[in-house]
Structure formats: C-alpha cells, structure tokens
Image (cartoon, rainbow, N blue to C red):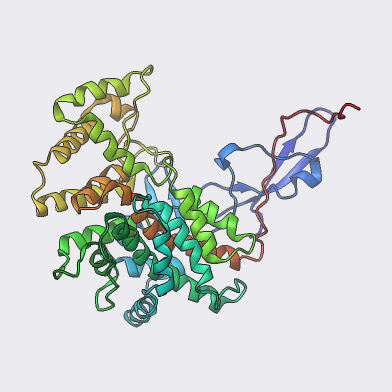
Length: 428
C-alpha cells in the first residue's frame, strides 16, 4: 500500500523533523505509518486502549461510528441481515464475495461434515461442575479441540487453515448447546445435518429424547439474524485478542479460546446479559421514572445498560434490525404482556422520546434488543455470551486467516511507557 501523503512531525526547537508516510484505505480516516518512528526519533507513541491506532490492515469489516455504518466486505449490514442467511454471510466474511448457489451448497456441506464432536471430548465435560458458567465450559472445551483435531495444525498451510476453520464454525454450536444441556442436567442432543445451521443449533439447544422438536420459523429467523449481526465487528477486544494470539503461530483452537475468554468480559460480550439483569433490578414499569432519574444523576453510580455505544455515536445500525426482530418475536409468542418485556418496551419508549437521551444520543443498542429476544426464545441469560461467541467465531476465524496470510504481519509486541522505579542497586 503506497503512501498517499506525508505527515511531518516536529520534535521541538533545534531537533530534526520526522517525515512519516500517510496511508489511505478504501473507507475511513487515513493513517500515519509510524513503523519507522522509533528508528528515526527514538520515540514510541502512547495510546491506551489503542483507540487511535490501526493495528493491522484488513479487508473484512468497516465501521463508521459517526454515521452509523457497518459493512461486511463492503455490503451494508442492513442488506445482509434481511436478504441473506448466516451461512451466506459466513462465506462472505471468509471469502470476500457472496456465494453462488453451488458455492453455498458446497460450503454448507463442508460445515455439516464437521458438526459432530469426538466422543472422548464429550466425556471431557464431566470434569466440569454442573453449575459452571457456560462460558467457562466453552473456554475449556474449545481450547481442548487442539488435543483431538491435530491433523491440520500447520497454520502456514492454507488447506490446514481451511480444515480448522470449517471445524470451528461447525462445532461451536454443538459445544454451546452441550454446555447448556450439561448446565441444566439434560442429555446431549446430537446434531442433525438435515437441518440448516440455525435450525440445527436450536434443535441441539431445546430438543429432548422424549419428544420431537420442530423449530418455529419466526424463532429461526430471529436467531439467524442475531448470528449475522454479531458475526464480526472490526478490531474489537476479542478479535484483537485472536489476532494477537495468532501472531505467535498458536493453533487456531487456542486462538479462538482466547477470543472467547476476552468476550466473556462484562465490558465486551456480557452487555446483553447486563441489560437483562438491569431490567430485573428495576423490576416493574412503575419504577422506571425512579431509575431514569438515577441514570441522569451524575452522582449516582447507576447506569442504564444497553443505551449508547462506544463506537456508534449516533445510532447502532444493528439495533434498528434487532428492534424489528424483537417485536416480531414478541408478537409471534404473545409476550407483550410479560412483566419484563413490558418494562423493556416502556424503557425503550422513554429513551427514544426523552430530551436527555436524545441530546446525549443514548439510543437503545443491539445488546438491549438481543437480550430481550434471547429471553423470549427461552435462552437463559447465562447463555447470552455463549451465543455471541458462536456467532463471532466466524469473524474471528476470518480475521485470523487474513492475519496469517498477511506477509507484513509480525508477532504482536506492544511497547509501554515505563513509570516504575529507575535503575537502582540492591543494598550490599
């Protein structure tokens, strides 16, 4: 990528001026290429949280938070979520183009051939406590995949990477469903390859040996949309974790396990679970004004979860789609009079009309609606982040594969601003 311009950095009076190339992408702000900064000046940059640092170049996902834009491989998320299914979006993220019917059929066939887990791996689950958080189980089981599927672990081999990618996409729903079944004490349900990806996931989550389970098409559509909307989100914390782990040459199962661990953090993937917990804390529609007042009080630590977004400064484009899905599900299941859903919808109404929220652009985000939808589907709050991980695995493996294939990529090694004691001697 040739430089489009030059940025001149003045180091102060009497010191030399540094010239650094400016690189331009196809969308978004230009970036200053600081790779030669230390060699030229002896200086590092300081950017906690990497909020102003491009850690890589990528062709997968683009976000413009000010304009409320999210693109997968150039396609607006609004179009993908309404015109494509999760398998088509997965193919797009991995390959750069939407599949033809033949390509989709081959891709789906490849995923279906890997939905089963090794029986020994299923026995591995008995080592966990029954009340273990599902994310704890997923971290352990996904990491353990490398002990069972070590026939394609050469990350420099494109065919090995593809084999591991298929395995991860196919097995994550199975692992997620097993973590849920183990937690509630029900028998594991094996995958059914005659069902599509999302139908099969619901089947493994909610079927029992005692009776046939037929997924409701509205529920299938809702969960498929949740998977699409959460499939990738540029260089967020968990994706950056996967890339950083992968930069060392670590196997893909270890990298995805690291991503799951990061996603588990309440500041990242736990937001929709936090939204439901907040609604339970409020408890009833009659108490909404009390909590709205608390949210506006700068001296009160209470915060409304699910409103506003760190990246999207105006609106979250995924929230508009998820709001539509939310009302479709509540209508289909007749849940508008449920205590918690009535509370959520009234809170939504106030937030969309209240001048305080409008002025500060604290609109309901995707986590607010996805938590409501998942609860309506019968998914417990402890599983919300596990569902998120199942969706995001597609983005993680796409980003990991892109990173491994990039000839400019090096092992991640951030520097620091050292603020400890200067050099000193141990007393004799």
